[in-house]
Amino acid sequence: MATAPAPYRVALVSFPGVRAFDVSVITEVWGTDRTDRGVPAIDLRRVAADTAPVPMRGGLSLTPDRTLAWLARADLILVPGLDDHLTRAPEPVLEALCRAHVRGTTIAALCGGAFTLAQAGLLDGRRAVTHWNLVELLRAEHPRVTVEPDALFIEDGNIWTAAGTAAGIDLCLHLVRTAHGAEAAATIARSMVTAPFRTGTQAQFIEHPTPRTDRDADALASVREYALRHLHEPLAVADLAAHAGMSARSFARHFTAATGTTPLRWLLDQRIAAAQKLLEHTDLPMPEVARRTGFGSEITLRQHFASRLATSPRDYRASFAAHASRTQASAM
Image (cartoon, rainbow, N blue to C red):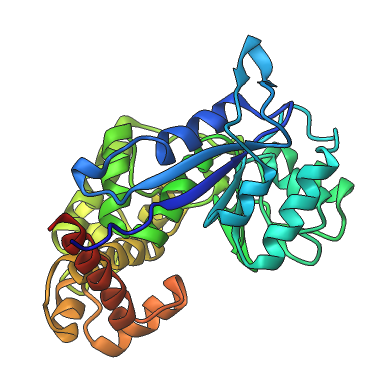
């Protein structure tokens, strides 16, 4: 009988002052067993300097089940946001994060967790993001960090940071997608009743008005649904605007205000997601995958995969074919 593949090991780093919401997000995404729905096994551990309960705001506490030494075994390390962004994290935590980075372990911080990574020096000379209301504070406290003002999440040197609150969900689902594929991320998102991925930036949340009328919102929802049904066609902004009953200029303005991204960038995100699903679940030749997802040619498909996912469509398919073979063998 074949040996089952080892679970994907995830460490939730905890210390006094971490935010309960971020801890809950990490636990919900990574700590719920969904193997019966096809999601690979995940071993989430709550890691701290010792196993004493970690106090959080609101009378809550977190009980660690591993010490910082377990970080040496982790495939992914997650750092929650903080209640107090100016209090320095415990030195053992900062030192352990530095050692993990030297080993090449992927590290991700949610919301104000970027301050912890900055305190460890891991963001020096790197791009990072945090909650829009904390951007200037992070810049002032850590001037060697290049703080991006509007991204939902970004990566630099195998270190991920995410914007505030709900963007932590976006980042966690993206990391699931990167490790286990679009279908696993979609399964988890469905169980959480959230979108598998959101497009756009923090710009849509910063003192930004909602669409002026219900009619505009309905038109934009309708055009997105139309686009998803016609991904195989060479859609242009003018086509989408005509479907919405707007001029191209007005449509682009309303679309960006509502979603935080341009129509063409949103459309590209949907095409890439559709291609990922076809590569994971079909044996269609690459030209057919490109045709069905609206890229037109394998060359164009390959260019966009390299730009967005840092891999090729063929390597992406091969990685998930190998994973499926291991999973099937372990079930025999």
